[in-house]
Amino acid sequence: MSNLFLVLGLPPLLFSTLLLVIIATGRVIQGKNILLNVAIVSAVIGGIFTLISVMLRKRRNASSSHSNQNTTLPNNLERDLQGYSGCNTQDYQAPTTQDSKTFDDPNSSNNDFSDEYIDYVTAIFLDAYKKGSSLLDDDKYWGYIRYGCGLSHPRRFHEELIENGYFERPSLYDYLSSYTVADLKIILDSIGQKKTGKKVELIDRIIKNLSEEEKSRICNNTNVFTLSEKGKLFLKEHADYVLLRKYPDGSITFDDYITAKKEIPFKANFYDVLWSIYNKRQRDCLFKKEFEPLSGIYGNMAKILIDEKRFDGAAYYCVKSLYLELSGVDQYASVKMYCEDNVLYSIEDLTDAYYPFLPLYSINLFKMVNEYYNPSILKRVIATTRIPFSITSENEFSEFIQNIINGNTISEEEYRDMMTYRYKKYIKSIQR
Image 1 (cartoon, helix red, strand yellow):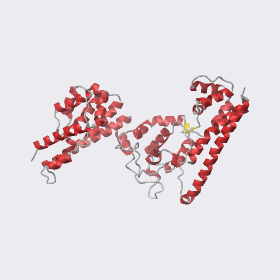
Image 2 (cartoon, rainbow, N blue to C red):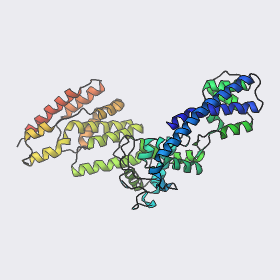
Image 3 (tube, rainbow, N blue to C red):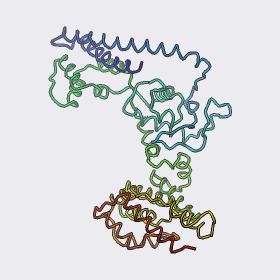
Image 4 (cartoon, rainbow, N blue to C red):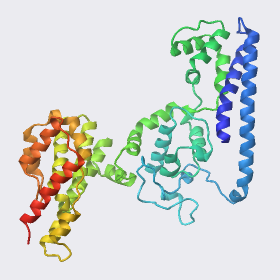
């Protein structure tokens, strides 16, 4: 709540300061008294909100001082990283190693975190606040910064990034861009300049008509920090870390990514690394005869090719993903146990446990590339996909694909009935 009042108070204070700077330098041609009154009213409003914010913060600090009196805050970038236990944020892939380690834990040390991970956290933080932010209370930073990246004290981390030159005070142009068009017109009116044009033109006009001293004074009065050139360069060099955090497949951890990246003998981009991970996973699944994850893996490989605009290859992997879905081979483990005369599996057990879902993810991916599909792709998929059985024939699968291309929809219930019928038919054909 204190931050809310502070946020409400800062804009009128900054606006009032800007007007007073302009008045003090004698740039006002007309309406000086009106402008002075506007500045005074803005200062009073901003002061009231700021005072309320300070009072609320003091009250909160007083109530929490006892519980925090023995807390030792970390004092450098690396020591500000903590563990990841309890991280459930949907848009972050938490590392699998170092779980539950924190710097408050006497059993952990500064060496628990690799240089790559520190770079990862730095890139994620820079991307999160690249448009500019003031220093916040620890609990006001984004959840994926505090929990996903394991920053126990994000404000301190933010301060260190400023000290190390990754963030800087914004340029006058960036600063004025935060104002509304109405505010910019008031400033232009106060310095005797015309008020017509787009926002960009208004800002340019203000900048051209302010002295260097006025520009410097305005910029130094802001508490907002934006990316410096150093920060932009770092973010560019570590763009793959930002893509990893935003990537929708939560099964790829940071450790998975770094391990795969180090194993690639050439300078790999983000999608090269993902491809190597999925390619290894599909080989492992085929070797171990674990067929259930394969459809999702092939779907993710298709998504990579779509992102890279390699649509012919994407069509192949989309069809491969759909083929695995309609084959029923995800039930291989149960069918195998039934065929081995396992007393725990009867034909009723197999059919009752089968409950297929419409593969919407694979279908939607295929819709993105269906114009690149041709029947030879299906022939190649069937010839290269080594699975022990399929409850869907080549003709049935071809018809399913053609329905998607023609825009014919199938409901969840219709799909389930169709697949259940085929599964029962297949089970009866192998009934012991």
